[in-house]
Image (tube, rainbow, N blue to C red; front, side, top):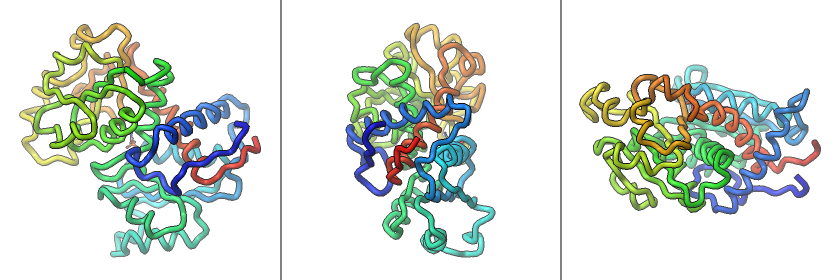
Length: 313
Ligand code: CP
């Protein structure tokens, strides 16, 4: 990187707020930083002296650990608390928690919360940068970024490509961040799932809607399969797991209707045998572990761009 650039906002709260230019800047930065993975010592001094704190009020394997990896690879100091270890269990408010962490000399807080709008709330109350690591059903911007980055890596561009997002759209912050980002970059997005799992008004974001997977699967260049979020939904949104799998599960038989070079994606964690068969999840079309690896590069780029990283590598 010859020139140090930054994002226009102090926070990353959602892809709804980013311009196409911002998105491209994140991708270019991630591409440059990916080179660090191949070094004998996987660390650059770009964020030396900066401190990044993970505040996770929901479980996470990929997002939390990749933010930690990303911060460490940029030489930042890290800290973290989770729901069980936080004084919110004793009645402390989220804003009080965030302000107490900030005065310890924190430059950025990465937050995951079940309440949509929680990152926005603390961003308004802090000078530190706030990064949304998933808020309720609203957005998961770094997942959207890593998904699009992976798509571009596989087919050069998303412009003019058709991305089919299948599953529980209603409860999916991943779907929303994908749609905001993909539409800004000129992609066609189709969302597909049972009518009860398609939220009202999703077309206003620029997505097309289908409830018939077998009719649209052949149009897709990428299929982003979403997890059925049992923990977020009341009972009765689809008749049974078996019927869901029959109508919307991606398995080898259904893949015969897809394009030969279709790319299969999943944000994880996968419910194997429900939304995605093991044969397809581990098969030649999938890029699921590439998504996870790219997640570290994308999170390095976001931290670098928000915290004014120095190109001293
Ligand atoms: N994709 C994703 O957000 O995974 P985690 O819940 O494991 O962070």
